[in-house]
Image (cartoon, rainbow, N blue to C red; front, top):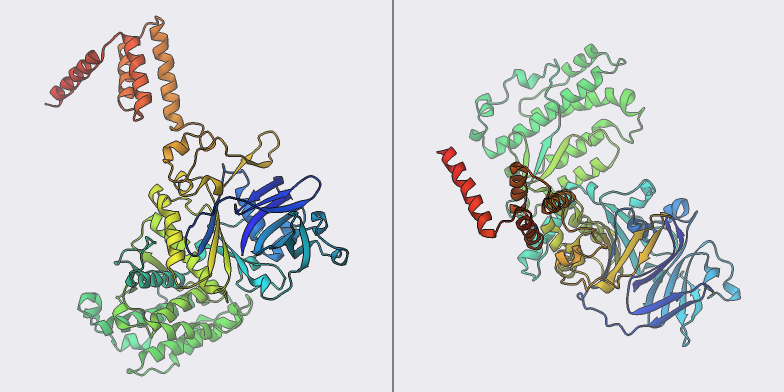
Length: 606
């Protein structure tokens, strides 16, 4: 099962444009509204056992690339609310043999429906069959449970527009006879998702599975820090009065035993939670803080159970907090219910993870179920609406900005292919919107290779993958054959987005990026604008001098200094040639003059 064709009659700035996502079939849809499909003679490229195809949408910002991903990836609610109010389109998939699936709007315009199938809603999804004359015959509606679950769209981005509703990010399936769509925001993946991905990559590495896929340094670790402010209230806590801790060791954490570090961390966390909750209560005029102190004093303390004492205080404070703060903002449960759940998973983390004021989890060490449970719980409370969602800050360290962007991307891919249910025998159509944005060129250069290798080597997820991405990176384009590129351009006079032919573009696969950049489709110039302006000005100055204009010696020196640092050899040679004509100097004279000035500078330094 694979995506092969999209016709856009009208969607945002795109009108009457066709897009091909697979070269095995030639699809035509002409002005007479006749839809035909023919098998082509193009040889399919083997990208791997699981990767059926990769297509790149290229073009400048504003050319309409993301609109195409929107149209392919919208869930039903967003199709009704945004895509289909002013949209007309249809999408074709190859099912098997001579059968195809068509979904879109206004099926009557396709000319494939018989009289018994004329009554359709605006959105339709049907199975058609290819006849000998290349026309199509209606077979049935796509209502078979297995057929409409043959493929999923997974749309991964760093930023989604306002047109994407909250329901788009649910992993629950739409109750419609269409292929399912899931939107994944790669910037909101939690710490447990990242931990799972890294652990999966470790397993792939340990299995010595061949292939270059994204891996982090073995020294990588997760840090978890409480996020309270440092202010304490005037509460009198009994266990402090009893000198429960050996404060000499607290002042010198390097002398603390492993068990003591865990005990100190948890006690400190509980105590700071109490002070933080008290601060919140103090700011509410309905709370009598004298009554609060009285209630706290009534809590019994046993020296052998200090954590129980602190938890009892939190329960008392929570009972005060619930009616005046929790209930008005709609929390589903009481404060202490949320807090006790968090405390329970925290207390089971192994002792060797605790430092005095933070938790450090070495990701490459053996996986621990209690660590997994704690990280999973942190993600759960942070994604929900509850009073303990901000108690911890988490990070993966040490990471460069490029590694962090890569981790977010691959974590999102891993999360997608492991979180959607029943994917083993399905196709995943993976939509990636500028996945290399804000990355170092080297990260961009290896991205396609690493995506392919990771999807090929991982033993989880979908049966096969078809990738559609947007980019303006020459590194990514040099990994993709020209026949797999869709080029978009914005018309200056109309603002419309149109697909442009790439006949003049050389073959892109394994092409040198300088060759790609020199093509006018990608860039008007291959040097920076400031450098271009500076060279243009020098050419004008040199030509005026050649024509007889007088010049100052300082002007000559400045021109020579700029020519000396030009990196592009052809441009530099031309500028040197103009310089010689302007100042009537040979290359020997130029070198001698340069040496003379250097000797003067050295003498000045001495």
